Image (cartoon, rainbow over all chains, first blue to last red):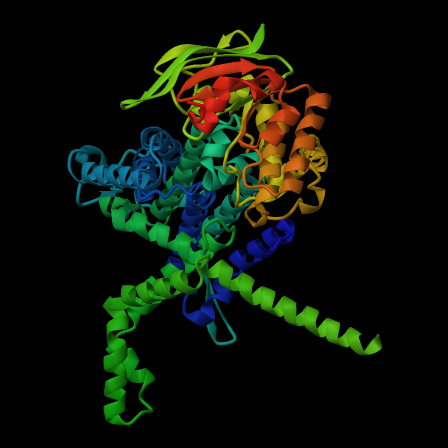
Length: 386
Length: 252
């Protein structure tokens, strides 16, 4: 594996994230809603990677923490203030406690049994949120803010419209637009809040990776038996990793609710948990950058491919003669629009089969090949001189 | 008084009486070898000592403290380390990281929430691990992935991992099985060297009589779950019961 200089990695990462609206604009992904989702699911994936990437415990229940985070935040919006800070704090605490409880029970088992237990817990939470806990979660309608809510810290709202979420007065949905070289650039407050939190979350994850604690977690993944016979109690280590990743998920849930003050039970469904796993595996489990990349790719597919309809396709193949045009559209049709997950599935399979280490393994291979060529050419240059 | 006192340990697997009233007294600072034919219960016995298996009856005292009923990591923290028959190492980690982990376990105990400090900055642990790898002559393989080591090196690495904890009692399960003669001799030298410099008590299970007779102070012979003889190496060599257990009842 490549040895990165962490400081350089951190700086490059921060620059890439902060310039996101500019870099992604040419790909049609430069609009706030999608950029926010990139950053939020990036945080989620970075946190999930601390559990799955380091310890190898495959949790199928992380969407539950996402949901807990969202509900907690919306409740803060209803009761205290539309400022997102109290909501985020409560979300992290609640999801942490929730993770402590679930982790304490599920970590009694490992491997497939652990996965099934977490899946069962997440589905339980989903059903509870959907039915029994309706007073807290508002059931299938989802939890929303209302004009009549208390919001005891905020000044009285007399505008007659719903207030928007903010960070000390900066409203999340504020966007500054400009046109640059024919591109429509949108700099959104909400995205920058998410981006700064993503950078902080990434930094924390680097610190964990490089710490003795992280070393123990990696040891859990490779040989838990040896670790036990080396005098290490593995349970508190795995539990701590589980709680940390649960808190990351709670934070991501809080941000989702902060960008759009609404929390529904479908956010806790197991398909959502599954997509977190996909993100991390696609990007490269156990690598630092991989999960963020994976989250980006999946959210990009979801947003872009699902919007391509037959009209767009006809536009693409306009230059072909009529019957060929129809044929091409017919071929591609199942892979776009509603069928975007088919493309995602195909890409996922190709990557897992040919690059088991995910996108990061691909990047490393390319890097190595170029490195070899460079070294090779350097040797060639030396040879005649000798 | 022995550092390890085993009394009347019994273990059944279904109808098999795997350990039958085993008694053992290991004297501090000595090398105690346990030999016996295949299936005699040697590994079962070690598994009972480290908490992998729970015996049905009996008691095991280590430095006057009971061992049975404790969890594997608690037993290790008392000062008992084990080298396994097939090397148990962290194969995805580097050789250096492999040795650092037991150093951390020795310094910080069984759990420490050390998530903010960098491994890079733990100079004392790094020095300790480097010194240990120097002692077992693996200093040039520091940054190799442990999975890529040769079988002999894996064993040496595992031994280094156990030793870096500074255990009071080291349990070795066939430390030279499958090794070439040269490696075997190197292992014997290493174990002797450790014996002299650190004074670690050792219990060795071994098939190779060359190893047993060059290391052991005391030998116990285990056959069909019971200790059939115990004594100095010279006594054991000519013991009729031992010959019988190993060679079958040839003289009848």
